[in-house]
Length: 303
Ligand code: B12
Image (cartoon, rainbow, N blue to C red):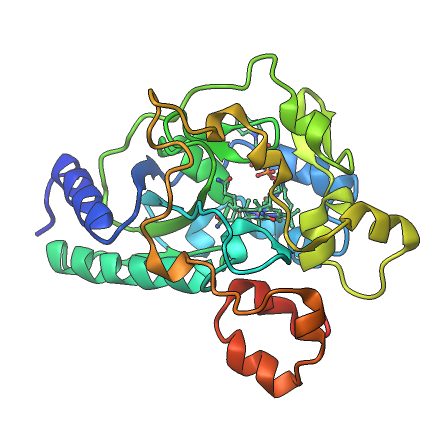
C-alpha cells in the first residue's frame, strides 16, 4: 500500500535532499502549458541544427509517452556553481566536472529505488534531458524557479546556477506551488550577451540558439563562419555571460545561497591543463584518458 500523497511529498523531498539535491519539488503531470512557445521557437528556426528539438516536438505534449500512467513529476535542482580553477581555457561552469547527466541520473535512480520500496507497485522513471520533456516548465510548476529573461530558471534564493532533472511517477504525490517571481525592468543579460542572442517574441523572452555561444560551441556541427568565430570569442565550451551578470546570481549577506559553491564533488573543475596550446599537442588517446567522463570533453579533441 502506498503512503498518502502529502507523506510521499515529504518523503521524496527528505530523500532527495539527503542525496544532495539542493531543490526538490513536485507538480502534476498534466500537459505542458508552454508548448506553443516551443513550437514558435522551432517554427522560426531558432533551434538551428538541433534537429532533435524539432523532431521531438510532437512527443513533448504528453508525459504518458515517457511513462504510461504518469501522475506526478518530481523535479530536482543541483547547484553547480564554482569559480573555475583549473586553467585559462574558458569553459562554462556546468561543464567543468563530470557530465551532469550521469551525476543527476545516478542520484535520481537511487531516489527511485528508495521510493519503490516506499510504494511498491508504482513506477518511477528518471530523466535528465534524455526524454522529450519540457524540464524547465515542470521544474517551474514544481516550485524550483521562475523563467528569467535569459530563459534560465531562476530561484529567488539561489539564482540560476542549478541543473534540472525529473523523476516521473505513477504515484499520486501531493504537489507544491509553482514558483513566482520575475526580472522586473532588469535587462542586464540582454545587454551583456555578446551576440544579442536573447530576443523577445510575443511577449516571451527566448534565446535564438543560432546566435548563442553555448549552441555554437556545443551543438553546431561543421565549420564556423567568420561571423560565428567572431561571436564565439574565447569560449571553448558553453557560455556563462547571461548568468554571470544576473543580479539573482550575486552573493549577498542577506542571500547566502546565491552563488554558493557547489557541494557536489563530481562537479568540481577537472581540467588538468593550463592553456589551449597544451591540449593541442595531446594525442587522441591522451585526450580520452585525461578527460574521461568530463562534460566539456563532449566534442572530442578535434571539437
Ligand atoms: C536546447 C537547450 C539549449 C539550447 C537552447 C537554449 C534555450 N534557451 O532554449 C542551447 C544549446 C543554446 C542551450 C544553452 C544553455 N543551456 Co540548455 N537546454 C536545452 C534543453 C535541451 C531544451 C530547452 C528548450 O526546450 N528550449 C526551447 C525554448 C523555447 O524553451 P525555453 O527556453 O526553456 O523557454 C521556455 C520559457 O520561455 C517558457 N516560458 C516563458 N515564459 C513563461 C511563462 C510561463 C507562465 C510558463 C509556464 C512558461 C514560460 O516557455 C518556453 C517553453 O517551456 C534543456 C533541457 C530540457 N530538456 O528542457 C537544457 C537546459 C535548458 N539547459 C540548461 C543549461 C544549464 C544551459 C546553459 C546555461 C549551458 C551553458 N552554460 O552554456 C546555456 C544557457 C543559455 C540560455 N540562456 O538558455 C539547463 C537550464 C537550467 C536552468 N536553471 O534553467 C537545462 C534545463 C538542462 C538541465 N537538465 O538542467 N540549451
